[in-house]
Length: 130
Length: 344
Image (tube, rainbow over all chains, first blue to last red; front, side, top):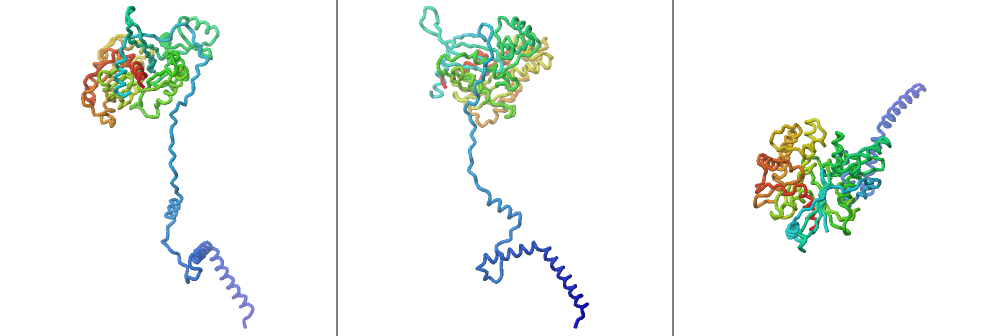
C-alpha cells in the first residue's frame, strides 16, 4: 500500500519526535524524580495505597522557615557550667638566689614612737564584733 | 606579735609593736610602735671590664648593695636615688602605681629582696602580717590595672619568710589609723607616690573603695618635662626644697612642682566628687564627715589649705565636718595595717 520511501519518511519523523520527547524528559528528570518521590511518600503515609489520590497534608513550608525550624529543633539546652577564677595563690616563690648582699648595716631607717595603739584596736574590735 | 606593712610605690614601711619600760625605775611599760622605712628604689650598675668591677666595688664601700649573678651591682634604697642623681639619671622603681612594675624586668626579684630585708623572718610560726594594696582606679581602663598578681607576689614572698599574710586596701588601713575618735566613720585619702586611694568608712566597715592614678610621681614627671630635669632630681628638690603650694617660687623646678601640685589636688577632688555623687553604695550619713588624709605627697606646705579650697570649689557632694592631716603622714597606713593585723 505504502511505498518504501513513505514508510522511511514517517519512521524518520517518528524517531525525531521521540528524540525530542526523550530530550525533554531527560531535561526535566529532577522534577519528575521529586514528583514521583512525593507521590510515593503520600501513598506510603496514606492507608496502604487505597486512597484514590496522593495528597500532601499540612501547610507548605518555605525553605528559610524550614531551615529555621530545623535549627530550632537541633538546639539543645546545655547545662551552664560555672567558670570559677582560681583565687588561690598561683605565684610560686620568687627566687632571689644569686642576689648576694654586700656591705654591713641595716637597710632602711628605724624609729620608735610611743603610741596608744591598744585603744584603737579595742574600739575597732568592738565595732567589728570580735 | 603582729606586723603591718605599707608596700608603697615610693616607700615600704614596716610597723611592729613593742613594749618598753616607761622609766628605768618603773615596772610599768608603755606601748611603742617601731617603724622601719625603706625607700623603694633601685639602681643597676653593670661593669664592662674586670677593672671597672673592682673600681665600682671600691666606690660602693660603706653602702649596702646587691651583687647579682650577671656581675651587676644593684644599689637599693636611698643610696640608689643618690647614685642616680650623681650620674644624672633616674633610679628605677620595683613598683609602679601601687603594684609590682611591669616595666622593669628585675622588678619582682628586687621587690622580693627588699621585702625580705625589711620584713625579716617571722618571730613566730605563722605570725600575722597585714599589708596594703591599692583599689581599682576610677580614671583608667580596667584591663590596664590588676591588683591580684601583685597581691600574690607579696603574699608568696612573705609566706617564704614565715608570715601568714593578708592584704587590705591602703585607704582602709588609713581609716583604721585615723578615724578611731570618730567611731571609724569618715573618709580616708592616702596620697602615695603612684596613686591616691580613697575609702569611705561607716562604723569600721569600708563601703566605697577606689583610687585615682595621678599622685606624687605624676608631679615629678610633669615638672621634669616642664623644666628638662630628671625625675629623680625633681623628686629630690620637691622633698628637700622650700616651697608652698599656691605661692610663687624663684626656683624653676619648685615653681613647676607647686603648679602641678595645685593641678593634682584639683584633679583628685574633681574625681572624688564625681565618684561619690549618687554612688549606690554610699551610706546616708546623719552627720557631717571627717576627711583624713596622709601619704608622702601631702607633706608639702599649703597642701591642707589647697585641698580644702578645691573640695569647696569642685562641689564635694557630702557635708564635711573637718579636713584633717594625719599626725604621722608617712606611717599612718603602716599603723592601720598593724591595727588590722591585731584584729583580723
